[in-house]
Length: 424
Image 1 (tube, rainbow, N blue to C red):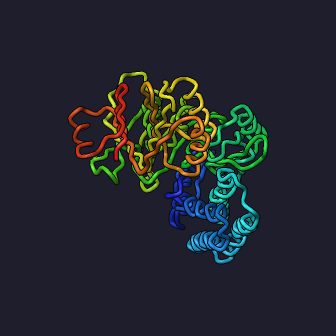
Image 2: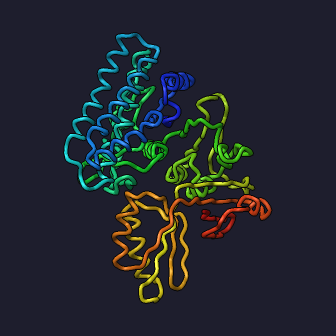
Image 3: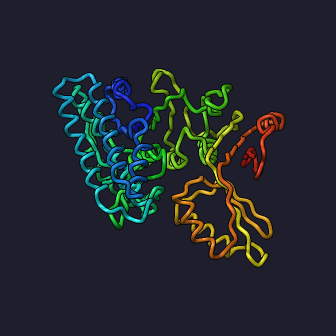
């Protein structure tokens, strides 16, 4: 079994869906599990649906849903299948948007993160439904799977943690029952189901990479390929740094470090399950599928990796201090990190002195505000948003100084091979 993952950019229009089909056609005698994200910017639009629902703006909410319905209908009309096949696929796809309309007519729950996961999951359900329908219409028989029947999580909505034992059992049973079709199997990325409540959960933005890794691990897959709009893993974002270059090979360890610090080409949780079973990960271009891309594998030999620049925008520094000027010690840190874990907030950088403690996190008000409400009764808290976190790996001193020249450094931290700056 091979595992392929296609992101939203690869299926943003009819041409992308047909290109996905052509790529699958390059592997005619393979059993392939295909993990697919929501199409184009669908997730962003669904976030507007959620925000409108949460703020009780029903007309705006319905308008966003209808815009999504029209976008997907137009995409289907661009597929090279018969008019009757297009009509049938549009009709069946409309059912998902009808469900969304009925859902948002109900009073919203006060838990934004719970609401988020119930709504945003429709992006992946719709995309896989359309792709499955197109493949069937063109003679590429496939099996559509609901990821929520297999991927079991806890209830940390928007950043759910995998319950590995039950997930492994579910996916192993799927394979044992012979229900994985020889040829093409389609499943949604990004979504799962809470073991206790049965509610839909999501694995964090860009979590479809992680879904591919989960299925590959549980199936003992031969390899995983993530199809991107770039030629492979680059050492910097080419939109910000025109000198960015492709890296041909990476070790699991170096890839883990890069994704941990925010390299957006791969979801940070993707690598470790593959490393545990020695499953190779390829990052290849869906625009040039004949090119080899980047391979991530076990490397026993010592290898010098290229300098990398990782930039995370929309960051916030949160500073904590004791009200009585005592140390910010274990008790305070336990409170802070306990709330971070509970709300699924990652501290990208942390630094403490005797009487203060600072962290850099994503500036997400729907997570940060509940966090601050929990902490402020106990500690003095100050925040500063609108910041950028730069992580430089394997940089020379000269290049490092040139990159940050003219910028205001609010926080700096150095570890082996890596320096981080929070910049205003």
